[in-house]
Image (cartoon, rainbow, N blue to C red; front, side, top):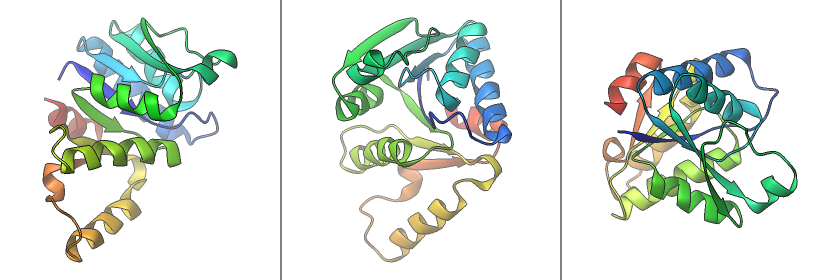
Length: 177
């Protein structure tokens, strides 16, 4: 996996443990020569992972909606910019350009991107797995809900073919190899 999509929060007011996880992921990606594919934002976990990849020798692809440019919130860590119209357009570029997808803590935009990638996998549009980086148990309630969906029989494809869980960086790296 050379091009890794990372979906995560653009909020600066996140817990330090999430910032550290983003920094460590970016350091590993950079030193391993990976390419980050992300939303191009200059704030929150998005900026932390991008700067960390960039500083450590990796490449950074930013998929940048027009509004981000208009508001002057594009990261200076972006090596290659893909300009798009809106979040729907950005989501398709992110999924399309990524060989694997990592989901750090985030809110509705992050979940929207992750669920779209999962739905496309389930529908057979690609076989990319979504890897939830479960920092400090952040996604535990989501996993419980997803398990309920599978137990109730509404899931068309076993979850282990759609998403993976990583509770630490070592597990995440193992999934990415």
